[in-house]
Length: 254
Image 1 (cartoon, rainbow, N blue to C red):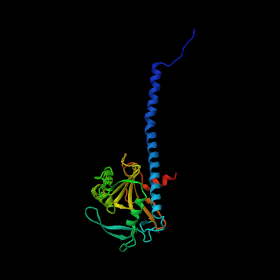
Image 2: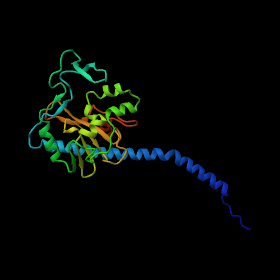
Image 3: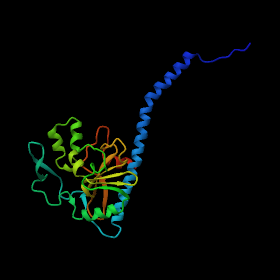
Image 4: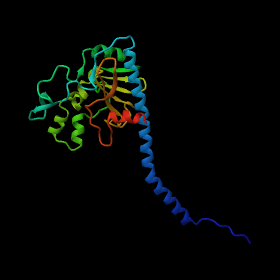
């Protein structure tokens, strides 16, 4: 006589239960890692498109003054007087004294450079000063509302965004211009599009549409028109779990 060995129903159910527990523990991490890799790839592509547009804008040999200082020749400056709401009413140099006109950088040619940069992008939709109502962007949070969502007071939200008022939520909704590229990437202007400050949603209207997740601020930085690179903008507060643009740029090369 022959004997057939097999698993009992109880043993099968126990095994399936263990597999289910392991899957429940590992799948969220796997999904998160996958999503991070997708965003990283999208970020690298968007960054390359921007750098290429900047390069083509200057390929005619012209140099444009439209950049923040990479190494500020004047040193730092700060706000020394705030009003009751948290708005800065007066800035001074860290060393004392009033601010020079170009304390942040050189911006005389931003209008001309903006036209040349936009001409080198594959734009399929433009919303001038009405990006939200025009349907170019989803309903992004602002620097002020992100601060409040993190536990900040109204005063702290205003104070944090006082030098970055166009990134406040109400201003993004009512004053920003945006350009949508053929692949869905959104370029959001700091108000009207000027290459001195802007943000990019690397996967367009697809979620999560959050700062530091798929939405990142940028600014050109340099110390002469011929040595400008696209860097992270300072007017940005990553939403919970997000990272800065600078961190994304650094991670992009790993």
